[in-house]
Image (cartoon, rainbow, N blue to C red; front, top):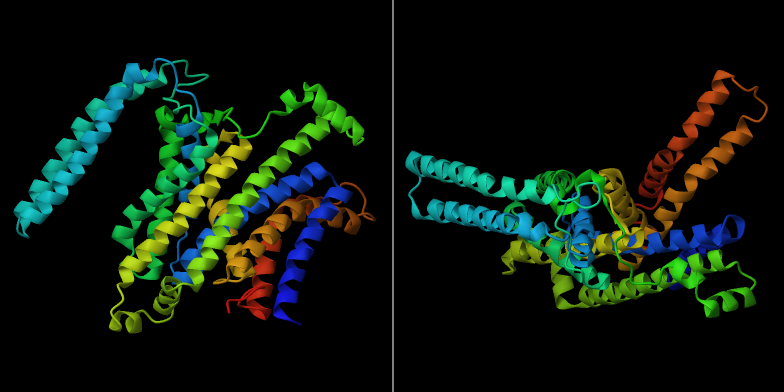
Length: 434
C-alpha cells in the first residue's frame, strides 16, 4: 500500500471511531473526545520534538502542562480585591530577595577559590538569605490567604483575555525548561529523566500548597472563556430559532456549538504548530538535531554545539506542552492542581508518541487522537464486555463480582497491551519516521 494512502487511512479510521461515538453514544461525548484529542496531539507534538528530533528523554511533561494551566489563572482571572495591598508587595519583595540570594551565591561561588572557606561562606549566605526570605514572605502570604478564603484567598490574575494565557503558558514552560536544561542537559539520558520527573513533582507540590498563588487543593473555578456561555446562547432568540430549525433542543445545541468553537480554536493551534514542526524538521536545524540524536560524538567532531542545540529543542518542546496545558485548563474552566498525575500527563503522552511514530510529526498527532480515544472508551467497553461474559453467572458469585470490579482497570490493561503490540510488531510506530 502506498505510504500516503496508508497514513490517510489511519487518520480516517480514527475519524470514523469518533463519528461512531457520536452516532452510538452522544455527539456531546464525541466532540469532547475530539477536543481532548486535539490537545493531546499538541502535547505529543511537543514531546516528539524533544525525543523524536533530539533523543531527549523528558518524563517531566506533567510539570510543563501544569505551568500552562497556572498561566490561565494568572493571566485571565480577575485580581482579588485588596489582596495585593494586603500582602502582594511583601510577596514580590520576597521573590526578589530570593532571586538576589541565589545570584549572590553564584557570584560568591565564582569569586572564591575552591576549598572549605567557599563552602562555609555559601552555606552561611544561603541560610541567612532563606530566613530573611521567609520572614518577608510568610506574613504577606498569611494576609493574602485570609481574604475570603472560602471563595478566593489568593492574589488572582490580571483580568486579561484568556487567549493571551495560551502563549504565556508556553513562556512559563519555556522558562522552566531553560532552568532545567542549563543544569540537567549535560547529564546522561537516565539522569535527565530523573531530574525532569523530580522538578515536575516540585512544580505540582508548589501549586498544591501555595494557596496564595493558585488556591492549592481548593482549586480555581470560573476561568473566563474565549467562547460564549451556553446559558447566554439559550437566552438568544436568534440562536434558539436556528437550533429549532435544525430540529435540536436549545440546551443540546448550545453545548455542541460551544464545544465546536473550542474545536476550531484547538485545530487552528494544532495546524500552526504542525506546520512549524514540519518546516523545522526539513530545515538544516532539524537535520542537525537528528544527526546529533543519532551520533553525538560525530556531531561534536563536526563542530556542532550539542548542548546548546539540546537546550533549544528542550525549550521549544516544553513550550508546546505549556500551550497545551493552558488550552486544557481553558476548556475545563478550572485549575485543579491535584488532577496533574504522571500517569495521565506523562506516561500517556509517551504512549501516544511511541504508538504514533517517534520522529514523525504526523505520527505523534495520530497517536494523540488514537490513544486518547482508547483511554476514554476502553473502560465502558470493558464493562460491557464483562457484562456479556458474566451474563450466565448468578448474582453474588465471587467470579462475577471480581470480573465486574476489574472492568475499571481495563484502560490501564489496554494501554499496556497496545504499547506491547506496537513495540513487538511495529516498533517504529504506526507512521514511522522517514
